View 1 (tube, rainbow, N blue to C red):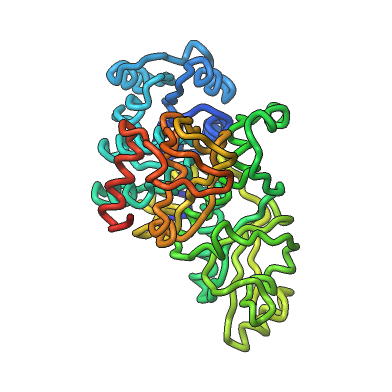
View 2 (cartoon, rainbow, N blue to C red):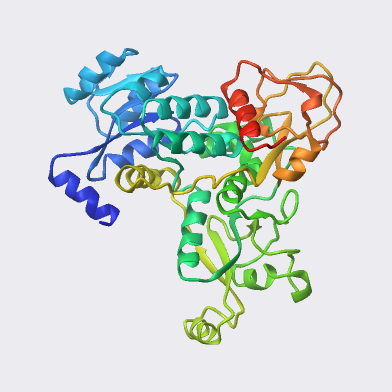
Length: 432
């Protein structure tokens, strides 16, 4: 099996390319397009975005001449344009999933409903699907993975995002025979559960990001969702409901991520968690019971053991995403994907006191934030995954700030694809 860079170079030398269709031309989508234009053996001939001008600008920022961009919502016109060497912009994501020249689709909207629809259409049309949309994966990833497996295509969450980077560290340690006892990510800002798009708007504009996206980072929903994806891929459980999230330095992690009776913070091993103070990296805490291994680990300055930390000090978000597309196409392998039934959930919790009849708004909004818990606990609590909540979700009863939202408390959007998938997932894996 050739390394990815060698395989891509050989494709390029033969005049061939992996054709990627992109859904979503936000900050992450733009980064993907520009990066692919620098890579060998890959190209992005089509982008779907609700705003045509933004998708057109995305191509232009990567160096495409405006005269070489065709705007259409018709599959046949898109295929003719692509075969003629043009670049296509469409408002309709289904066009991306249907055009014949596309091999892999990257979903980069971060919206569970759009992600669910795109993934389903990609699977139906035999296209590998890369989810730079961990929000969808944490909600309905297990059933999407099962459907993709049945169709003989690859469903994967993206390299570059923390779940993918964590999985790569885990794979490295596991292949070497280490006992992996904890994995996680750094968090670069203190948690503020009261954060809203209004309180963060100025900061978001300064950073050039969507205020709702920044809100999901600051109120920790994003961290909970990412570690739910890791949990469901590895079978590891949350360290506790909502995680522990200690403040620490890298060198503290082997001691911290040991059992309480050994002076650590854990009740058990094989857990996910986050750490304040080590962002933007990801980590795996490993151990070995073999003396010779411990001697060599000490010799290479990894500490006295028995626990050691493996740390990757960066994750390049969308810049790495094309590698997942290449891996899916070349090797038919995911970067990270659910292993089976859900192990964890990110459930919705009231961000403020809420009244019956009030509409909720979902991830990164004003009304709820997400908290990770085991799937077993979430089922017992009848808790609603935050990915099912959108602006059509209506409360049936008053809810106090800090209270978990349950299915009994809300009327969900019956027209949503993500809800229908979730019900199928619960039935398939016999989860409440």
